[in-house]
Amino acid sequence: MANTRSIRPAGAQELVQTVGRLPALPGVVSRLVEISSDQNASAADLSQVVSLDPGLLTSILKLANSAYYGCSRTVSDLEAAIMLLGFDQVRDLALSLNVIAAIEPPGVSAFSTREYWKHAFMAGSLARGFCRPLWRVYPGEHYVAGFLHDIGRLVLYLADPSAMREVVAGVNAGRDALAEERRVYGCDHAEVGGLACRHWRLPDRITAAVAAHHGAGLAREPSLAEQELVQMVHVADLLANRAGLGFTARRPRHRLAPAIRLALARRGVWLRRSRLAPLVARTAAEVEATAQILAVGQPAASEGG
Image 1 (cartoon, rainbow, N blue to C red):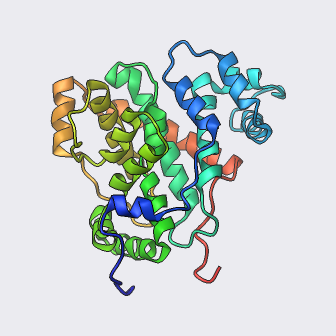
Image 2 (image 1 turned 120 degrees about the vertical axis):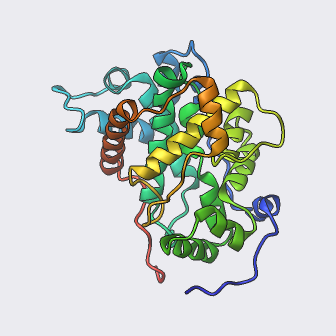
Image 3 (image 1 turned 90 degrees about the vertical axis):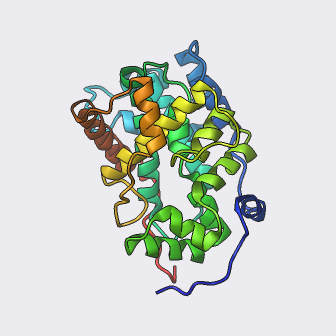
């Protein structure tokens, strides 16, 4: 059993201030977030942003030409890739790959970043997928919020890798992840993630969804759009974990938070298995294929690596 050291920052704000290594997000991420919230954004707008990054363009074309999508001819330009993969998927993939390149630390030994990012892809894709059929809203920043919802875990790792190893060991032994984080760090990843989003000057709706995705209340009265985004990310996180995509070997046993359950009933959103199961299965297959084709993330490094 890992030794419990006295740590460690007194709370989330102190912890974020401690992480001087927290890198800035590339400017392209801000532009992609703007595009995600603009219902009038076009494929030309997206192409203009993606074309600025040759590595990103190569990754998107690689995915489009993979056997998974079964295109009968070679996809050689971005416009054709957008037609095949879809505007939303290319936009969100571009954002995700930029975030991963910017902030994934090398040689993570506490957990597999490959599994971590697969969970992020899954939660983002589910949150986007819920919009029209369940919440009946335009799919805007929902993917971004879902993809970033656990970003606080990377911040916690950067602040103290050995402490995160202790948390993961506790979770794999059957203890609650949030409780372990609070015991070891004095705060949890949702709090820290919200502060990181504020540090990156992301929109308030995304910051609120990341900070409250486990059902915690916000410090102020959220707008209706913020409430809906929190609900979608909470449900997406829950379903991603139940699908077996999580950052630890042991699958978390989270339940729908009572406040979220009540809000969904009032909103008239019913989470019927018959409706959700096909979406979850299809999304999980897409995530697995994307992660494998693009070699996203790393397995957990050895302690001595």
